[in-house]
Image: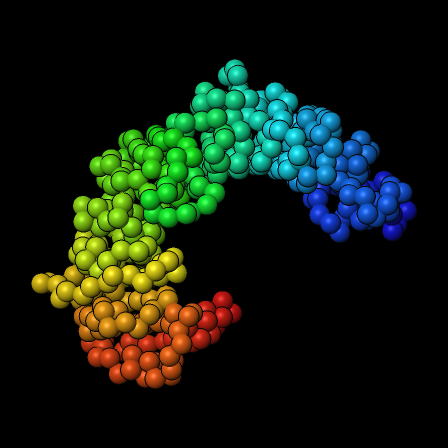
Length: 418
């Protein structure tokens, strides 16, 4: 509208609006409104005026991200109410001002056109009475504060066709037991991470338990560094799971993992029982991320319980100290190694004698292996060419398998993308 007279009226009918606070825009707005460039400005000034002038009867999407310089007396709720009145379909609202969390208009929780909703940071979720979001399919709750646990229950129960839920919690969100009872839910990502990891013994309780009751759940990711429990009812047939927990999983939790085809697991003391107790009869791809423990025996147990496994990745990126890895020749070769495994990758391979034994064992017993990728430890100080030559000389029972190193793997990935 500034560059062209033609846009003086056309822009007012644009159905998708995005207002993002950043330094570059603050300087521009400072000049536009006659303020000093040194004076911090928030995009709320432009947002206020442009929404007043905007005339599109229907809003496809509205994305508002306000930084710390938004005045604490700004009536942010009126923008949300304006969008609801114009039957908004996609709404993202992030508030980072210096004041406390603010409530949004009640009309938001009865909007019958909303398909996607994302609320972030200084938002106070107050659902005091039954509400209804009949069209909502995707919901993101990022570091918001809830009035109470009932607000969570009422909000989620008001979404009869919700398919995707993302929850990022923080230590003052007013909820002890987070309950997810959504019959239509297919994908859940739940993050409950303490602000600072000091040490293994310094686990802090920053939120209570998680309870899931979603029978058709297919994909589930949990990253929970609290010692609190997670329970899953109705044993959904999960297809994909990412598990990073500090608490010991119960039997119901473990049984729900038995149907997964893709598994990413942070292997620590609390998750080792999953490797021993679960029959992964459907598992095709597995990403193991060891965390400061002797992980070879749990790995062998998992392989023995995964007869259909075709892709195995070992990622030692999250190791904070040298693992006390010990190799002991298994009595039996896991079925997946001799009949199914085609791709094997090891990230942050350290080249210790025990790691050499583990790698040698996998290469010597994987009859169907097509590709083995090794990424050497980033802190490696030895002669990389020498170690690569030694690894290439290892016996491989599969005569058609390739042994690739990190640079070759990056090249392969670029070729595949093309």
